[in-house]
Amino acid sequence: MAVTDPIADYLTRIRNAQQANHKIVEIPSSKEKKALTEILYESGYILKYKFDDEAGKHGIIKIALKYDPVSRLPVIRLLERVSRPGLRQYKKASDLPKVINGLGIAIISTSKGIMTDKNARTENVGGEVLCLIH
Image (cartoon, rainbow, N blue to C red; front, top):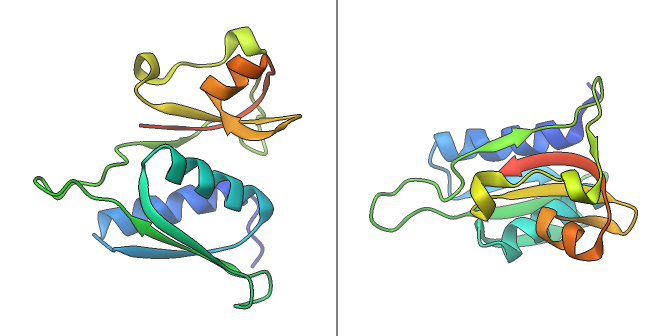
């Protein structure tokens, strides 16, 4: 069965793994998903990641999820898909969403690649708002 929205599938796999308290989640790979994974790592939402291009048809991404050492709660509190195949959400650089006044991140697909809302504002580029994370 083909996945019609691979980014929503990616976010759902992470969400489900966290609810089940898994340490590692495996996700089918793509260029967009690799970029999302790198942003999550750089923003401190995941511990580690590994791109395994030999496994499967397109390869897989292994993500080590991050939990709070004291409360054992996941670091990622919310993963929300904004733009979807049925309703694309495009924003200008000046209209990009701020997640909890900058405590969270919005991931934007721009003409200069996939980046956080903060980087997109710095580069002064708008684009498709893929998801919100905090």
